[in-house]
Structures are given as structure tokens and as C-alpha cells.
Length: 227
Length: 155
Figure 1 (cartoon, rainbow over the protein chains, first blue to last red):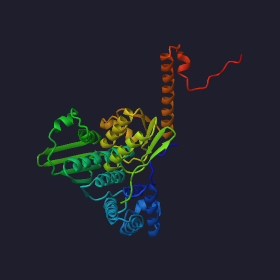
Figure 2 (cartoon, helix red, strand yellow):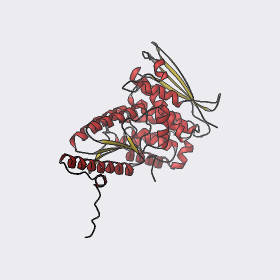
Figure 3 (tube, each protein chain N blue to C red):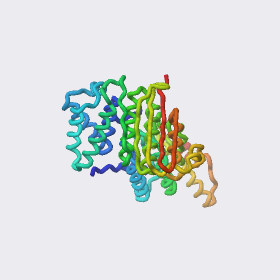
Figure 4 (cartoon, rainbow over the protein chains, first blue to last red):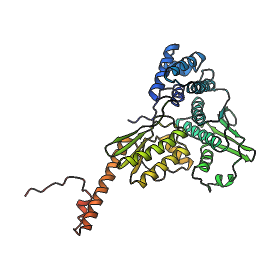
């Protein structure tokens, strides 16, 4: 038997552990979560229904203070956790979360963006493989903005029309992508894999629109839950 | 700042890297350098990269793994990627990404066996070459199984 998930059982528990793992080892990340749950008197199972609230957030941040001496690390960590609180919304899995915009300015934002994408995809009822596809597509978009456009913003929104699914919007004010047609036709390959990222993202999503000029780049992509 | 390097474990003639955290670009770049250093410092025959704990396998991570395999190949070391789960494999294929020069194994156990086998093949072909250079007859049937002890007929 092979283990594919190194983390806990629920989507939110996984997301919290992953957010903590950016700065801590897996063992410490798990133990911070466990003691925070203990402190607020919530079981792992209750956590998924209850969602991330301020009491839990506070308990988690308190846990990070025990392991991280660096104030900057603690602050980043608490920001990442706060992002999950936004994404998780008001607890019920049936009511998907509100729109959350993420600023992509550092490398860690790329990791945070794909973790949030995975959590949101789980809440919206996407299957395991599609969750990975969505998280991968978001990772590609976030990385392109970070690398080639000096950062940008990314938002993920649940949609109901034409079908139930997820809309991803990535916008930056970078210099634009000069050889976009070549890239989308699959004729262009850079050493850094830049072309592969955009093309890969297009292939992973159900709908993909991109507009790029010297003013910036805007990508709107959709993935729908299959019936 | 917390140390976040990924450990490289040496086991007999293998280097094993098991990635159990979400990879940032910085971590991937550091891993590339660390593996190159480790390959230079040891006489490893195989490199196994175990990725069952990786959260997302995107184009940057895929090309970095290909780069690592390329570096290893120049140093005479085989690279095997182990533990890629089905969802990630499907995602990679759908994106059209290729892991050039990388063999894959279901899990760590299989990866270690694959390296062992290719090492046995190499020993056999080395032996055949030495025999040929020395002008000896090459017995291909025993050459291919040179790693195994031969049954001796009782006389």
C-alpha cells in the first residue's frame, strides 16, 4: 500500500498543514494544528464543517510563535492562514466561499495560491485529479506573473453559469507576452519552460482566454464540475 | 529563518531524495545545487527522487527534475522518479510535459530495485568488455547473468 497524501484527512486540515509547511516541517505543522484544535476544543472531523474561525486562527498563530523565532516568518504564516479563513467561508461545504483576490508578489505567494486553489476546488466538488489540474494551472499562472510581470493579482470565483464550476482570473501590468501566438500553437519552447506553462494551463482548463499587450496580461480560465 | 533544505540521503550506492513539503521555486533551485554537490562528492550509481509528498507538479518542477537528471547523467548516474501519483501523472500528460531522461517507478522500493538491475547489467557488460579486450572468448549466456552465483555441476 502506497500513501499518496502525506497529510490529514479533510480538505481544510490538509490546507492548514500545507500552509504551515511553507515554514515548518510536516511533523511540526501537524502538531501545531493538533494543539490548536485541542485548545479551541474542536475535533479533526468537526473542523471541516466548522471552517476556520478567529478562535482557531488565533490558536494556530499562537502555535507558530512556539516554533518560529523570526517575526517575519510568523507574520507570513499568519497571513497565509488568514487567507484560508477567507477561502473557507462560513463553514458549510455546500455554500462555496466568497471571492478572494490574491496578490502574487513573492515566491511563497505561488505556493499559497495553488493551495488555496486546491481547497476551493475541493469545496466546489471537483474530483481528486481535477483538483490537481486546477492547482497546477493556478501555479503556472502565478509563476508567470511573478517571474515575467513583476507580480500581479489572482482571483478564484465559483460560477454557476453556464455550469457549476470555478473561474480563475489572473491580471498583471507586466510587459506582455510577445510571442503569444507561437506559444499557444505549441511552437515555442524556452529553457525556463515559460511557454509550456501557459500552454499547459490552457490544456488543463475547460475554457481559456488570454489577452496580452504592452500594458499587461489578462487570463480568464474556467473549469466546470462534470456531471 | 527556518532551515528548509530537502535532505539527500545516501544508502549504499544510492542517493535518495524524498520531497515531503510544498516546493517553492527557491527550494527547487537549492535542491538542484545540493544534488549536484552530492553527486560530485560520492560515487553513487543511482539517484532516486521520491515525490509522493509533492503538492503540485507543474512545468517548473518538471523541468527542474529533467535538469537534475541531465546533470546526473553527465556524472554517470541514473535518475529514477518514484511515487508520482496518478492524478499528477494525468496532469503532466495533459499539459504535454515530458520528463526527459527520467525513468519512473511506482514507489521507492521499485526504484531501488530498478537501479540494482541496471547496475547488474552494467557489471555484466563491463565483464564482457574486459574479456574481449583480453582476447578471451565471450560467453554471452553467462555474461548476462554475471551478477548471479552460478550453479556448479557436481563432478
